[in-house]
Length: 443
Image (cartoon, rainbow, N blue to C red; front, side, top):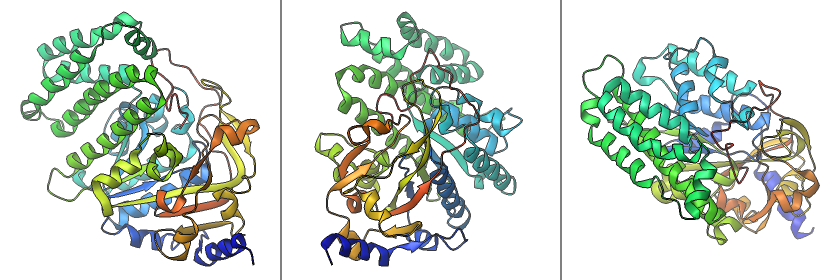
């Protein structure tokens, strides 16, 4: 028996087949006991099974282990609109209305049938619980600079009109760049004065007035203030991100993932303000959640959410990656392109995906934190990452990188043949004021 055949045999013996029954994730739930963060990845941004299985796991974490909600790779204001809906608040009459904020490419990431199903389940579940036990739905990305400015101004006009005037003056700095964050980033790279001072001062002023803003109002003042503060923090971090875009990928990628980790920190603090130990499920691409130190990303100076959270929370983090061999995916060919159903070509020989495929098990959960499976998956191999763009004709160059799977994740869920997520919309709508989500990395 060759070394490779021995490795496949080790994985076959360690794998727990998934049959679609309630006990599928008992082992994962047992591993999640005592954790504050369960990170659920995805190997693409357009695969139905990744959404569906993450939703199954999330429901059990909320119901059985009393997690407080889910934070996803989406912009804060758009996701917060969904949060209001699932908690029984807000003005949206239906889940599709609540998802209407996700109109910018690639809107299918969140405007899809699987998110509709999850949001409706969350709303029904929350209706049976008191307000302080209701699970939330939160975004942690930073592309919504202009939308977040509007949210901060809207909040301040309600609670402190004089402060709103000052905020409007500070944020007006961006207007001279035509409302395009890329134009702003480019202009500052060639000498234009930045808006940094104003956005920092705005966040500081908001935080100084926190106690006053959170008292004496009929709505949930703490939640509303936190929503506004997070939008102001997003504006500050987005301003830095757009300036960094023209200094190179490493700088902008790191700022983005640092913002997402910072958002998770802030959420845990806010949700635990009553004294309980808050806990969150996190959904994002494998490239964000698998520890960057175990990949070629880390070798070139990039960090990610998974690395940062492991460094901050240590054993309180459980990280689960997802994998597939072939099937179909919803993705675009170019930026701002239409959503297409594309065939996922079979994984390359020598990749982790091909190794998992060769076990012959259609769907399985694999703990890679200890034992022979961990030893078998610590050797560097190719790993596939499909983002919002998929170009199978250049797949090796466009979608593979080297990694050590057992050091990236604590466990892996492999679904050998997967299918494309079903968008609610057939064609994407470009937004002239914001960058596409996941820009420029597509992940």
